[in-house]
Length: 435
Image (tube, rainbow, N blue to C red; front, side, top):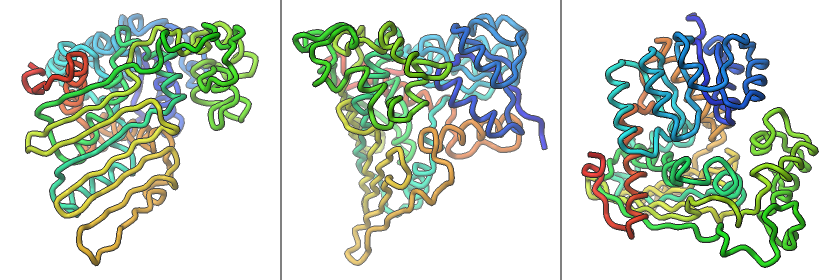
């Protein structure tokens, strides 16, 4: 058995600290965390205690970590969106392999620069397009590749962000302002821009898009609302976006309903308590009124894509949904595949509808596809393990591991869609845009 791959983590937000670091707990034979960095000293302290990282390998920023000699085989870069490429380039030049949180960058030239540096340095770079690794989508890929519905002619897909998730992450939270982070179609939906063309074996030729911020802006603030939910808001009782209702009382989310993890651990990384959460709601960003934040990302968007083979895809992202789910229909020359991915495997639907009159609908038992569906439907840990096995030499690159170049295709599509959206829905040729 080979030794565990030594890993340094730059950025200890929820993804870096909880999601990717968790694989070191699940697979100590494969992964050892030897260095951590974050601008939040409390997050560094918590990670160091959890993974026995010595004080001399704890850093106050990714920049400070990168000033050191190479500390590990791999660096996980989970800093903020607009920091990714600068950190990644320096890490590659020091000899690290990279597991890079998506998106790569909201700037086209930075995306291209990273591809050039990765090629020059000869290092492995995997962007965290985790949905490729989920059992349900791997099964969809297997079905589509088998030709069971013939040639895929059209894809209809939607990402239902969920009303409270939009309020948490994209109105009050870290990804609310595209000037500081990324546009919604890139930050949230580059998964989708990557996933569906990959599943169907398609490449996008041109794209159009429309969308805007419909609800979450000052002019829609109800009369009597306060700028903070706990500052005597007069519409608190009827407002579904009230911060106390979401973080304390919402089923599956609220502290008073028994939840102690996401999104509460975003507000209080050291471990949520009612006192700490209420203090955060009184003073921190997550207690702000959703109509009085600095957000500018869209809360609804539609994208139409024409593929190089003449087939099409339509995609809708919307905040105003009761659940956080993804739904898609793959319409082919011999049948249709429907996939509805929810949080619980027993509630997911994966079905094959053949055109032959005597063929019944085939329902796939999604819950039977794997034992662990935690973290993006089981994709998070699978992705990390696959990457570690590639670095250690235990595995060759599999068909669902995405190369940096392929990942960047999704970024070009997302950035082209954002250009189209902000320019009246004009058509954008991907090849020309990428140049």
